[in-house]
Length: 259
Image 1 (tube, one colour):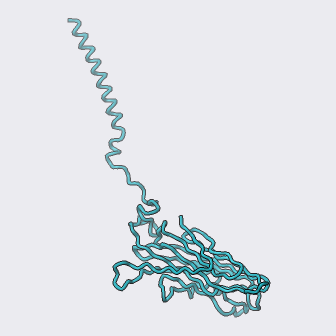
Image 2 (tube, rainbow, N blue to C red):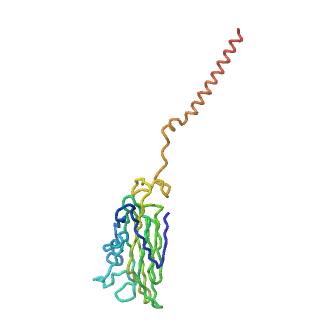
Image 3 (cartoon, rainbow, N blue to C red):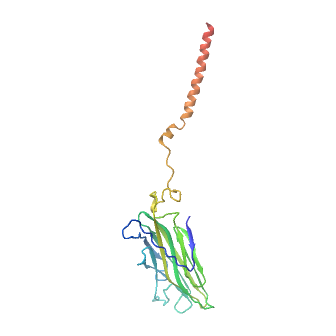
């Protein structure tokens, strides 16, 4: 089981774990790969998403800009009643986070910032949700400023790599105007304390917090199978010998009485 936490209107900054004993305090770096987004050319932009120059474990999610040359509708992640904008904007971006050898992805922190019309009569709303390692969760729902954050703790799984998908939906009602201005994901890495079992996807640590799900109990010793059932056979032999003894004793007694 993994734990999700939602921190509305707060930005979580998670520093990369430093590898002890490395000269110059070099940080271990996660890899962000297989980036795709659902609405090509609008809202999220997988092609411009890239690690931050200040923190290689932070993926800055790209956002489209400009206007569509055919519809003259904005490509921004924005829902508005203003001319040139759609009243609804939504998109999903997916990617895989992979830890370097000897480490696992301990947690992921997502944060987004944005703006909204502050007019008293403005109507706008939206929601953000994500699925991490197959577990879905709502990051936040909002009827105004879309700035929200969420954290997922993956310590129980200790995964070598994690698939992630993030979906954001924005809707503008009368005089509404709501938009994303930035979004990012920060990965925290930790060293593995026990070896993995070698299954697909990096495996599950043997004897770790999960109890070693993919590490079955060792087979019984070879001698156990060979000895199994021997007690019954030996017992039968003993009972048979006792019977023979009684029979022989009776015959001997009989011969003795004839004399």
